[in-house]
Length: 210
Image (cartoon, rainbow, N blue to C red; front, side, top):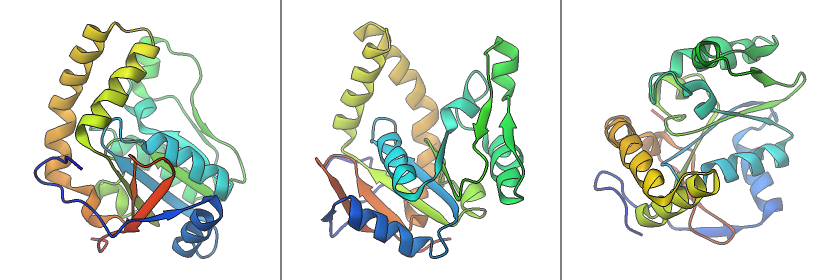
């Protein structure tokens, strides 16, 4: 697996099916309730994992891309804490229009259905130190950097960009993502590491929470 120089490969890896994954996540959320942060580099497969985890746990997913949209690539953790995690912890309704939505006239809002027992926040930087302090579980999705890039480019082309446009967008995004992750290193506080390159779920124990 080709990783960024500051990141070491997790392991030992072991495959798990949905039933085993549900059990594993249940041991990390023993009362079946809490905040689950799913972090990983762009194209790693974190959204796929987050949505599967939410399905297995009866949870709801909030995407940090929605909080960051037309706002800031990395400086959105205050929005997540004040308008998503905080209200959910207090049992209040989560229904927020991020600043970029208001500025750009985007319809709708970021919401979490009432009664959800597991809030899954996923995206690049979701497992950062400032948010991990307010979470119950941090998952890092690890992937080969070349595979992740190719997946990301394919996704952007499917969304309507040309290959050249997708490459320019990717390279520009990396100027924010790479230094942020190199400095924060969320994988070091993960309770669980998931491989984004395997056909099914392959997991490894995480490092100590800090």
